[in-house]
Image (cartoon, rainbow, N blue to C red):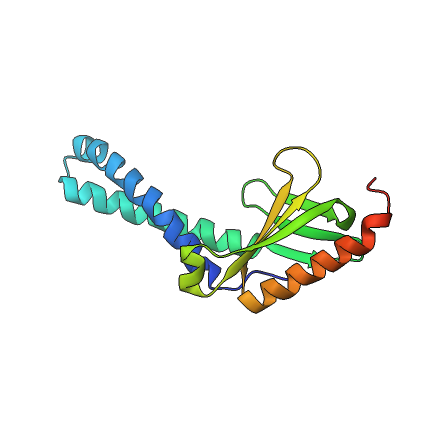
Amino acid sequence: MRKPEKKVLGIWLLQAFIPTFILSLGLSWPIQEYTRAGYFTGFSGAFVLISALAVGYTVYRYRAWRFEMKEDHLYLEHGVFRKVYSMVPYVRIQHVDTQRDVLDRLFGLSKIVVYTAGSRGADVTLPGLLPGDADDIQRKLRDVAIESEDRDAV
């Protein structure tokens, strides 16, 4: 089983920072009112507590993420509060994209998005890959999808 690169933790922590900051601002007023603490003290306390929770969640999220290319399907495991085990048959793959948003480029990472035949939301993402590894995985997924075209999707 393969895991994302550890650098993806930095991306996920940065993505958690904005909601943490906003939630801390929102909680600082009630903390100030009910504890007689100053506004800055309320904000600081809320920010430290929520940041600790965000870091714990992010680390556990990283530990829970893994994927593997099996003989006839792509297997993924992820999730903190709700564990998700996905099997994407190669015969269902429509196309595969490699994406690099701003944070990915800053951290030197890529992600792969696998689009499948089926209902809405029928795509999976493999985050935190090195660009060379993402290209290799994309190529392998394309090749196995082409090889499995003649097989039945069920």
